[in-house]
Length: 289
Image 1 (cartoon, rainbow, N blue to C red):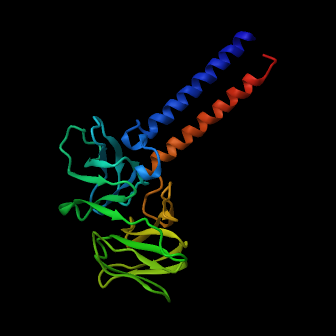
Image 2 (image 1 turned 135 degrees about the horizontal axis):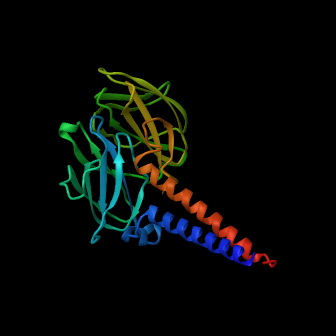
Image 3 (image 1 turned 45 degrees about the vertical axis):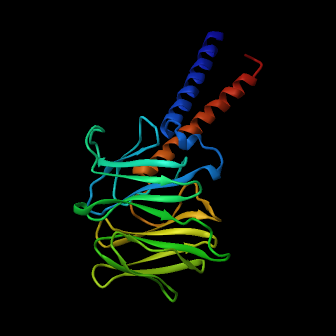
């Protein structure tokens, strides 16, 4: 019996170590970004695929002086990552066709100069024939008290020039060209019914709820089954980055694939590791062994 219990302890300990190491491996090897401490010593970068007719890509993010990049595999149209905390410096971003060897020349490359406290979106935009990487400056500062702040990211080629207006409310943006992003507008918080339409192409309505003090990006995408779809992302609240990059409404394929899968897997593994550690602690507390 003693041998069986000892073996069980060893099995539990081994399982706990395996889960913990797997969780750490899933979240990535520490880089200058993860080593930074304090909100005032980091910047924020997220990555996006916003080209409707471009197949899935693998995205490579290389920190200054790093020998190996972080790799996000199989990122499809409409996928936007959560913000990554990165130490200040110049980071290289490269995109390759999904599954292509890392030794292949990248389809696109760019650099993003990260400054402490600032936020950026690095997005693949435009039609496939004219695909480019664009660095957007994200103003995540809090809006005026009692207001919300929203901008439009136009990634629909079906309606290449778009107006976004609230029913019985203000115009959010007008004549927004495909592959462009508007300036932020401050609006009254609350529930809104938005009308997305243009002179050419399909239109759609989107039900959104804006919270006072929050900053949003409204992504307009080509829907998989035709037409348009809109997705409202809460990027910041009270002047602070939203840790999980919440999606407040709409659809667009961002919940289960690409970037979004990484923190979900890591979180689940970390939770399992915690449960194993708790079980080990309880067993050690038993004096009948």
